[in-house]
Image: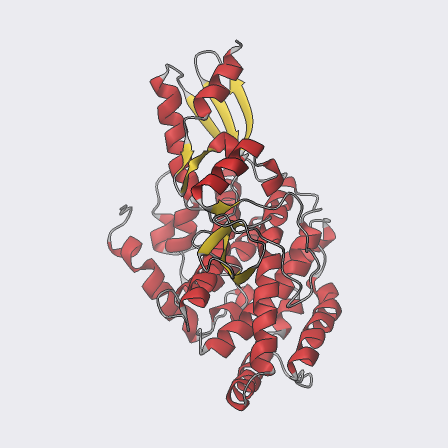
Length: 162
Length: 265
């Protein structure tokens, strides 16, 4: 196994502190991994400009890699190309669903700039009904919207398309 | 370049700070969370711009003494960082538009201001993502995705309140009348914007006046609101001549770092 794939494997141990079932690899925020002489250089991209988890994630990456002998660990932040939910892995989407968060739809169904547009068909992660409604486009974290299921009545988070 | 980047950062930070004043005071839980999310996006965007501004400053320190001369800032030893730019400058060294520093007012004022600013940022960042400066382009590309959400959210509220009850309609009219004199400044270029336009970094902001008016008119029509007749516009924010409101905002925002320099928690 090449050292870079070893680093990728180690990065799977680093979880998103706000959605702890997802690793940073599942989330698709690792843009590049480079082995340097004795250390590693990791490029990460934020999901949202103000995501408060980014500092914690960078620190955890340092700790995990340093714990396995990689020194120094350099973390670079890249903004372009901007992160999109399309970079989330299929495994990541399944983990989200099992955790009770509706994963981003594979394709953004509604992307016109119109106000009060037709809402996306979002599936309830609990009873799998599509009979759901959006309560707010902004949820408990920057990356999620708040929905409620009209059938089982459970409120739930939707990892919104971005 | 430094001047322009600082201006973009200041707009995002000051508006973000004003919106954060709603956190814990929103009209209902969902909207409290929404406006706090928007504040977070803006402060994140401000950080990206400030980090770049700090690098530009550190690379050529002596060039910017005409822009920043506050003693607290000049006392920083070695390289300055994003926090020094946010916390150690005095009001006259901020380059934000006057519109963003006005008090948050009632929900109608906050919504109307957000809508005006988000529409402007949407036009600006759409172009800036193709700027000759790759760093500004990357920040704009990232920010634009968030601003699109802000436009839709604030636009829906403009319509909901304008086309709502007699009371909400009246409050929207009052908010528009109060904010309109500060809108013109968005489209009156400052020297640093003219220089940026001349070197191909972004368009002269005058260019955005018509598209902005068109988008505003479209939402106002749905909301049953009128665009005020063109009148006299207040300006000066981009030159560092601010309203009294900015001083109070900075006093609150900067207090801790000024009293306990370098404090962390």
